[in-house]
Image 1 (cartoon, rainbow, N blue to C red):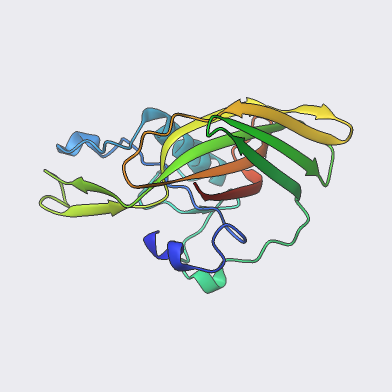
Image 2 (cartoon, rainbow, N blue to C red):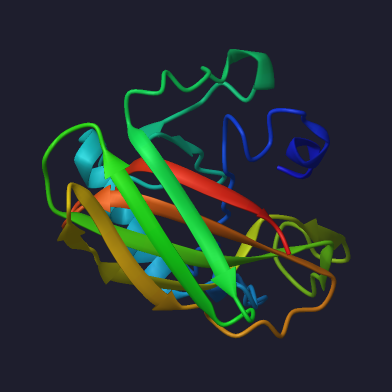
Length: 189
């Protein structure tokens, strides 16, 4: 995923987020970025695809499993998802407005992302290696959006910014109760 940082399409055509899972932690080296919630998220996607297994690295694009890692093959957005805007105030509150292209109930998600973060692996298949992490989800919050004059709106407290290295934020909208993003925006802070 680190190669995505150099793409001119970053934050315009795609918003990468890396949810580290905890199902490998039993191998003797717990991933400090992993969580049970991230694992549950990956399992929900696998169930939606009709897969009986999960694996890493798992790559999801627009809510679907994506096995082709070529940047050139990532489709450009078609604009049919509506307009999403997010404003961060005082590095604490994210005000989100979403003008959807169709009716529905919407949820907003905000993730704080870490870049240039290192982990010294002590055990497992990567024992002795130093891993570099980019787009890693350090915190994630979600909230239902209120409909107001044809737009969905919400304010959400941004998770605390206490990461080493560079920090970014990703904001995306889903239909209520569904994991697949409908529209996303992000950037470095």
